[in-house]
Length: 239
Image 1 (tube, rainbow, N blue to C red):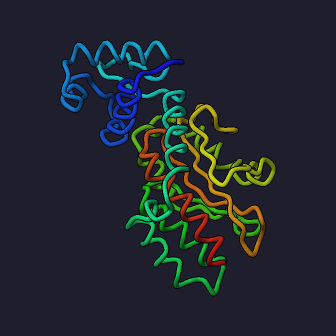
Image 2 (spheres, rainbow, N blue to C red):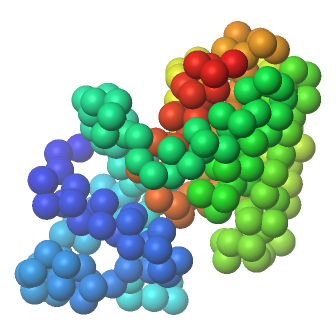
């Protein structure tokens, strides 16, 4: 798949705008952003659609990203993060997590719960972590308040994913420091329209402890991936 820089930028803009407005993104909005005509944007969107990276919901003139579009975008973010110095990655949100967790380091379980609660507040997703043989969950209300999960089919698929999350983490043990499973890539609840972002870290409980978030595929991946990665690394350091 050969993409031009502009097509990549338009895909990223569709993903980022869609995360904000929770609605399909139209050519007029993008034309203003890129300072080109709507016809130029429509032509580029048609190419992105042919590549399977965006789709047109039948009720709308706008476009939404597909799982494949999100995957390409996330891979690009991963490459960019790998080349960034650590100092760039530590923003105000990351400092807020550090401050909150720093008060709890005498108790590993409290520190991990505190880190999860911080991720929930900052990402507006559901947060989870393994604490020994337990799975700690926080922010279920965040998850089901997303417009995507208003329908019963999606909600049931998400519930199935949650029911099976702990055994899956125990058996599958994601092997990278940061793992992102988007929509249909999810091992369970493939039709849930949800993304799992998971960081592995060493804790007093296990060399393979996990912390992460579960949310709609429509989210600010750059920010969320950065926070989850940073939180896992920070927990490993302080515990």
